[in-house]
Length: 156
Image (cartoon, rainbow, N blue to C red; front, side, top):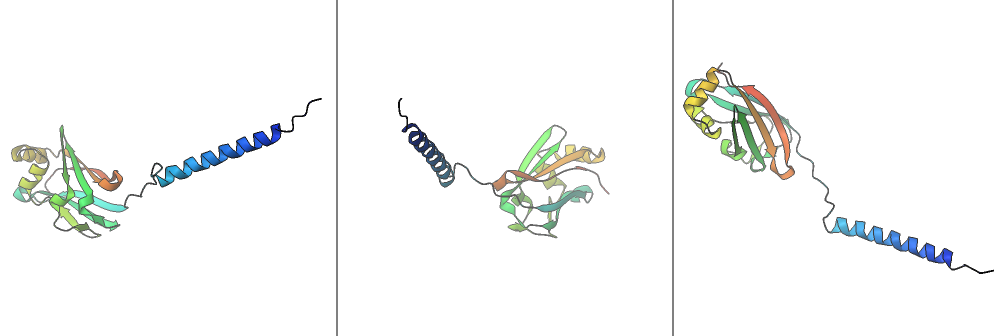
């Protein structure tokens, strides 16, 4: 009869060693930044609409509530027909932060057409046809879309 009393302690030590190695790997991943926790994106209530007529035509973005947004952290992307355009939100705002109740505007027809990267005459035709314009507001630090809507380009 043989005695295998060493089998049980060897298995126990091996299991303990595996647990220590796994725990150390998980701890090193978090300490080294491998398993990063994501920061939540700001919560905002934004409305967009077209305003004005003729040379005063503009697109208005209205912050209706919740978190203040640093303007430098935002990018606006537009889609009209086959034209896509992106620009930093700081281009259409004079302040560094966008708070509840504040309005950001493209100012006038010339500036709006320039931001959309289309000619003024083409933009006027889009307005006459009530062409849909898709708008997106991105929060760059979190790579999230804070606002997405489609408005009609039309004069009141």
